[in-house]
Image (cartoon, rainbow, N blue to C red):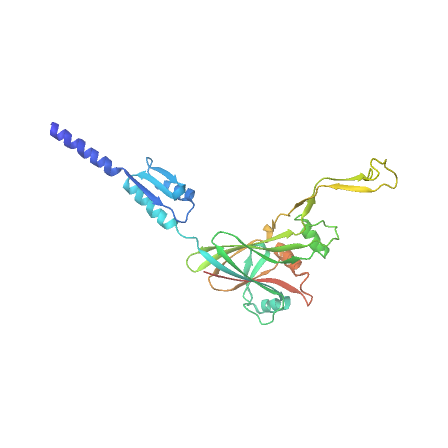
Length: 302
């Protein structure tokens, strides 16, 4: 009986050591906290995990089956972030061109959020000379920013629209310099398409000046100190101005998304709502030859 009991104890000890395993996993691309959360989701109730940030390692202790599950998931997730190049061409196109194409029934592909419409115009030979080309390098899900132009607040309609965002006062007649642009985010959809989100923004360029200031009566000079003030005394300004840059304001109502094939150019136009108001504001200082529409040509490559 004793030799048999000893054999059973040795067998149990071997199975216990076989069950327990410890392994260090190196994390290459994921944030360590995200990698730890992914690994933890694959471990058993008794599994343990210890991050080592200085070496970007996760030390895990569990049975071999659960460790292998965690390693398989990490292999899928710990990949370099996809990189894209977005070519954004902004122009003002004659409304007549778009109207004629609409009449033929070959232009409108569908409405997009935020007051945009996707068009099937392609590259048109009848161009206005106001065309701006931008090229952005984008990491997936990370926004890239471009500046598209200056908003002119001449018309009352535009001033009222800008006042809703706190950029200008509706009844003000001052010419406030305002710049505008787009934040562009892209992420892969399958192997040959990309989803692109475009969010317009604007910013008042003049810094705000704050600080205490007061007017003081000059009490004298070095030659005649402590001279009592008189009706002809000079005035001095005592000020402590502080410059504060204005915040970037996103025009969330004109944000839009579109899924496009890689390496193919799509065209979207500001049609209505906030996108239409933005287009009107951006074109106010550019186009004087007939009515124009604000158009974006977008192409994304790897």
